[in-house]
Length: 190
Image (cartoon, rainbow, N blue to C red; front, side, top):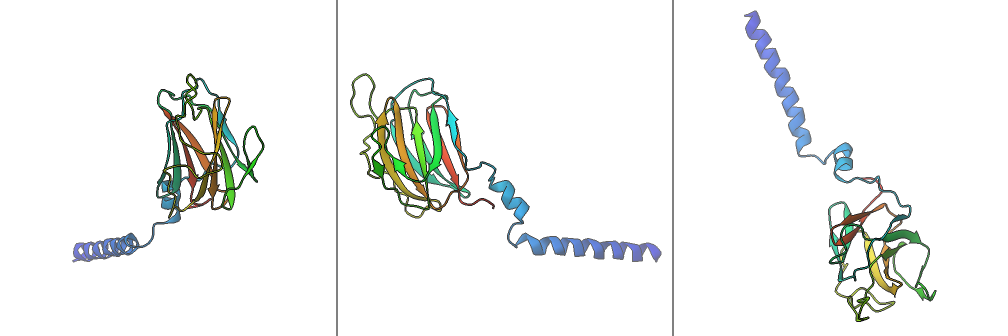
């Protein structure tokens, strides 16, 4: 009888634990889980990397993810050492003219990529951007973080883009083979 009572008590305790686990299974994820799924340790300070080549920029595209919005610079033949400098600025000014380019949003990222928008050998356009205009073919409607895009032009082998974002949020830059990626988090904490 004693063994049966102990077994019943163990089953009751196990059932209580399972019930508690089941009741939280349908609930919103805990903050620790969300933080692991959406890292925000990127910071908002300027980031840069040295260039090793000057292949022309082919395309700029964007994408939406659960934790961040993404901008990708396609540079065929650029390898994985594409130069860049990305920083928040109060206003976007075209390099080298100093002309002001209005960018909508709560904060502005000035993105400079070590790839001209033209073919360095022929001078013909490789990317069809127009200074001060939105990026061609890029639609950021419905994005959580991105608010505006503006082409800043190309000068001395680098292309400038203004990216308007909702607020000054953490961002990261990733160098991949033949492309450069800029991710801007949806929030500081997840």
